[in-house]
Amino acid sequence: MDVNILPEKQPDIPAAKAADASSSLSPSSLEHSKPDPYASDGSIDLTDKVSERKLLLKVDLAVLPILFLLFLVSFVDRSNLGNARIEGLEKSLGIPPKSNGYNIALFSFTIPYVLFEVPANMLLKKIKPQMWLSGLMFCWGICTMGQGFTQNLGGLATCRALMGLFESGFVPGTEAAFERKLGQTRADGSPGCAYLIASYYKRHEFQFRYSIFFSAAILAGAFSGFLAYLLAKMDGAGGYEGWRWIFIIEGLMTVVISAIAFFLIAPWPEECKFLKPDEKALLLKRLSKDRGRGTMNRLDKRAFIKTLTDWKIWAG
Image (cartoon, rainbow, N blue to C red; front, side, top):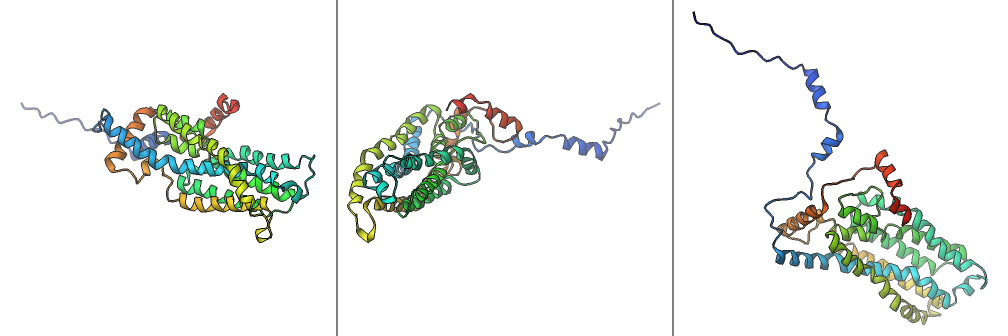
C-alpha cells in the first residue's frame, strides 16, 4: 500500500510577532545601514602615485589659498587695536593713559571667543562651510568697521566682544581636525578652517597644510603695522581721525573679501564640485582608508560625558 507523505506545514508567524521582530531593530543599527560617503570602492587603485600627486595638487589649490587669505585678514582685524592706540585712540575716546581701559577692550574679545567656541561650531553641522565661514567673516568685518565709529570705551569693548563671538567659530579646530582624521566626528568639536582642511587630507598630510595655513598669522604681523600707518595718513578725511580710518578701511576690506570667499571656499569632500568623478572617488577612498572604522557622530548622554572627561579639552 502506497503511503503519501505530505510535507509538514510550517506554522504561520503571527503578524504581531513579525511586527515585534521588525521593531527590534535599534536606531543605531539603522544608522549604520546608511550609505557611507567615504565607503571604499575596491575598483579604485590607490597605488597610482601619479594620480594621487595630481589630486593633492588640485585639492591644495582649491582649499588652501582662500582659507590662508581669510585667516590673514582675521589676524589683521584682530591686531589692529594696538595700531589704533598708537594713532591716538585712547585720547580720542577719553581713556585715561594709566587706566585699564585699553586692557578691558583687549580682554573683551577673549571672553566670548572662549565661551561661544563650542555652540558656534556645532552649527557648522547644519550649515555649509562656505556659507558659515564667509558669514562669520562678514559679521566681524561689520564689527571692525563699527570700532571706527564708536565714541567711548563701552562702544569699543562691545565691538571687540562681538568680534570675539563671530571669530569663535572661524579658526579653532585643531583637535577636532585630528578627531575627524581618526574617524570621530565630535558633536562638540571645533569645526572651522582647520576642520575643513583636515577633511581633505590624511593625517600626515594635514600637519604640513595646517602649518602653511597658520603661517598667515606671521605674514599678517609683518605688514599690518605698515598698512595701519598708511591708513592713518587719512587723518581728517571726512572729519574722522586717522585711527578711525584704520578700522573703517580694514573692516570694509573684510566685508568685500567675505563676499568673494563665499564662492571660493571649498565644501565638504563628498560635496565638492572642483573634482572630476574619478578624482572625487579617489579622494574619498584615500580618506576612507586613513579614517578607520570608528565613528562618533551623535550627541547623547554617553557622548556628552566622554567629551567632558576628555583631558585634551581641559589641557588645551
